[in-house]
Amino acid sequence: MKKMDEQPKVIYPHDLSCFKYERSDDEVDRSSILDTLELHFAKGETSVAVHGDEGIGKTTVLNQFISRYKKDSIGIFLNAVNGQSYAQDNIIIDLYRQASYYLNDEESKNFQEAGKRDLAKVFYFLEIFLQKKGKFLYLIIDGLSDIPKRDHYIVDEIIDLLPFTSRHIKILLSVDNEENLGKLVSKKIMRFEMLVFSKHETKLLLPDVDESTIDSLMRVFPAVPGNLKIIKRLISSGMSAETILQDYSSTSGSRDLYEAEWNRSKNVDDSSFEVLAIAAFSISPVSMESLQNIFSKSTEEIERLSDHFGYIDLSAELSSNLVFRDLIKQHPDCLYPPRFRL
Image (cartoon, rainbow, N blue to C red; front, top):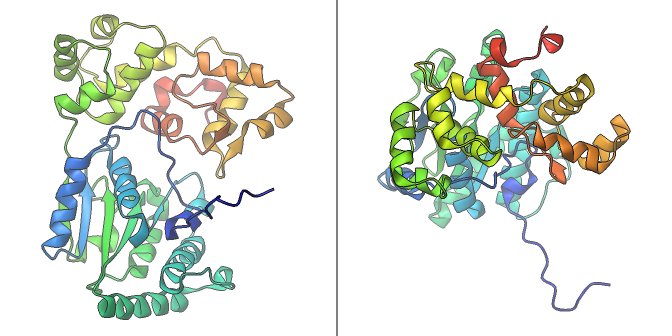
């Protein structure tokens, strides 16, 4: 029975998206970068591309930005698992669904039938609405650089969908490099270079590590969030920061950290890797119950995997696991088990 004082759940436009990024527990608030992006938009910029190497935290920053402006934001966080996960038709439907909800304060009944013209039309009416209200809407796109080179044309198709000529729909994107940007190069867009973690941010992520050791870690390994989160997981698994510095600090940098993490998983049996593969690469969220049904394993058996795989979260509800997938994508030779190589 519903309680009388229970408040109805507030739904924001991005809540309707199928392309969402799940915030991790060890995420560090990067308010200074958010404030800087906000300042650029306030000064009149209409399009900003957050630029930086993989693992530097672009997706996290964009997700924190959309969380800060959840009432006035729509967006997609692409996850290039396979072609369907970044198909143009799916992206059109998703953006149309969010944009029409923002415009009408209710969900469209026929959003699944939306096409290019419908999306262009809703962006047109959004611009008029925002202009009359004196408001701005943020449109956030993450993951364009993750689309494989063989599907490079899709990047151009997605860029063609975006309302770059609008003055009241502000566009915020993330990019890794110049090779996979396609038509984005020709757009008038401000480039914002992502910064590595400051010492303060590193201490927030590694609160139990003393200051001198943090200095050493930051000297040896580039202070990008991806590296520091691996260090945190290794320390949580029982490895000391001193051991990490002593045994995994060659010129290979982050590659050594990935090897250190993978070495903890070498003796896991094939069935465990199969569970890991489903949890890591599923397009849609995977529940603990579904893993139990697929593999006829108990909750305890599946949870035991977390002792071997510190880089994947085997919690009650699982989303596609970016950590493991990125780890394999960046370092397939040293990390991918031979029996799973194509």
